[in-house]
Length: 319
Ligand code: NAD
Ligand code: UDP
Image 1: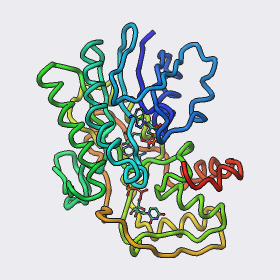
Image 2: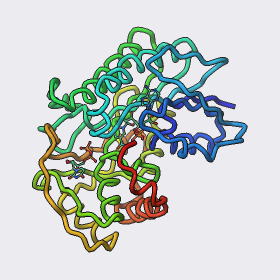
Image 3: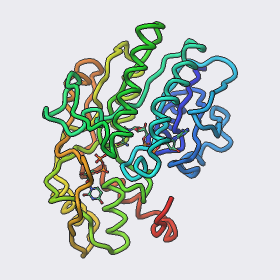
Image 4: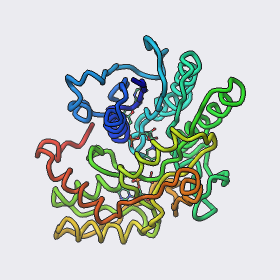
């Protein structure tokens, strides 16, 4: 039985990856310190013989008994309000945490995949974004703590590959959504859905002309799974190229949720990227991958999830 270590396992993407690897017949070692994650996301593994959980901060030395075949490093705050609230931890998990996991991968002779992001492109001047674009990041801006941690993460991963011959994979994830996102994590989908469910107006930042391209979680997990098992070392964009402005997106959410509320406008956060759309030609060619689930279908499933939360969960304002 192959063994995989998944960091950030109690988070949104990490918990879906645990589901996938369990389904594929792996033994899953899940690791998290719950800084932005939730025990509820992995509760369903209780009693599963092929699953074990380690409560650990990956910026501290990591000990794992026995062999390991794969490591997926997904631990990191991922939403702008999270990484603005805990900027130093964000820098540490991308740098020290990644260093620890690369060292572990080397010691165990395991293949490691690290979760990078479209944020390495910053506020992009190339559109759509291809993997060979170097990006446009403000190193000293408030978002820099996340963007630069992820850029460092990519660099140290390539250094371990080149210097130690480690088997490494880098996925550049574009905005992904679905069940188990934290309602109050500040990202646009939980924010709008929470507002609709509480009967509040939807807060569009700036004039809403900025764009994003949203990928449903099952498509993202499929892309990551294929990339891990591929033999390609360079970074690969995984996302859904279907782009929409935030203003139009708010209108879609109003229709979907049936809320009678309206959109209101708030200040645009500093360095908020104006446009984002993945060029997925590489993933198509290398992995035979492309997203299958459209926004309408994915948003419906996601709204059903948020609707199923308790009143207490719906009104919680702080994590
Ligand atoms: P999330 O906040 O739901 O999950 C992150 C998990 O990492 C949480 O459970 C958190 O407790 C854990 N964590 C954070 N620091 C840790 C530490 N020091 N030690 C142990 N655990 C720690 O976020 P997510 O959306 O699931 O994102 C997961 C990964 O994917 C992140 O690395 C993120 O940068 C990357 N990513 C996500 C998206 C997206 O759209 N969801 C886009 C780009 C990149
Ligand atoms: N956004 C918004 N209202 C909100 C939350 C976010 O208009 O209540 C905007 C945000 O400014 C950004 C887009 O939605 O332009 C996506 O934000 P998110 O935090 O989900 O992801 P990221 O900016 O990291 O792509």
